[in-house]
Length: 158
Image (cartoon, rainbow, N blue to C red; front, side, top):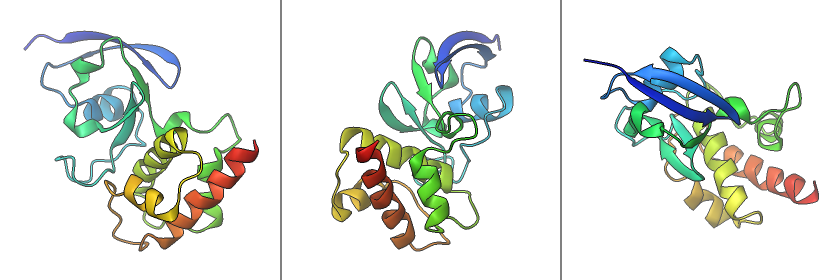
């Protein structure tokens, strides 16, 4: 099969790559571009570990073809921090011990970022609903919810 040339924007940077027509965006990000934050948990869009923001929409990158990213904007967990300064969500996940094995953490961070961009003052129920597409086998969810609540407060004050 011939490769598909794709021009896109990832975390604010113009990026070009070649991929196979049937290659998932998750594989392009990880294997071709070295952006290993998004994880393959299920490969079917059920766990959220590979979540990214594509044109301001939260999606599972395992369900999007790399070729479909042509001309679009992608945000990954690698784009959250600014140099050595963590994003408030990343900082609060650390402070609240809202991570353990780390497989789900990038997906939760991206989902929470998307949620807070659309709803800067969510209730606990809205946070739980906004994160419902992400599964964690280690933490329970309470520490994750508390971290998002705390980050929302910090982000409103910034």
